Length: 141
Image 1 (cartoon, rainbow, N blue to C red):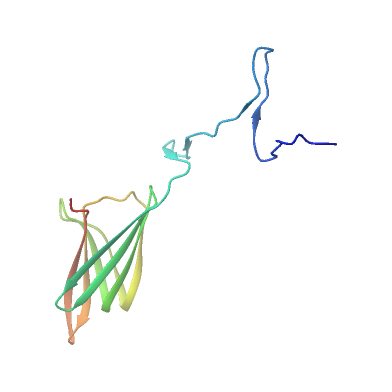
Image 2 (image 1 turned 60 degrees about the vertical axis):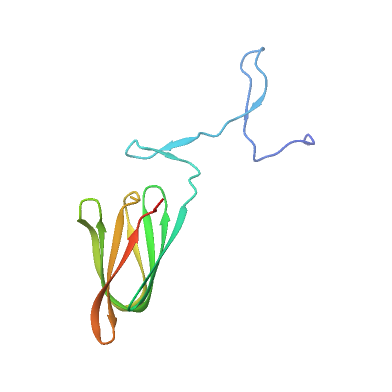
């Protein structure tokens, strides 16, 4: 069996039902509904934002990957981190907290949409003392 020159097995076509209809390519849906009924983009491209803070004890760097309905924060510290607190800086509520057992880098995974008003406090070991280093995770305009 011979195929037409422009035949593409990966393209869907709408077959005409009435004589007046033309053959046309099927269109992909622009949104997808999940089990909760929420509509999310089918081809959402993650947004990656980098943050950096220098302080007297070293540097903190964070890379936030916004995946639309969840986000990850990869943190790199120049000094060992013992624990961290992620706060909403508009109302001073704690969003999440954890311990890292003297890690120089760690990952925070949140199963909620990204909010652009967070602050990350990290307790680091510097000069033999526990000190707090703050990294604002906001886009200042």
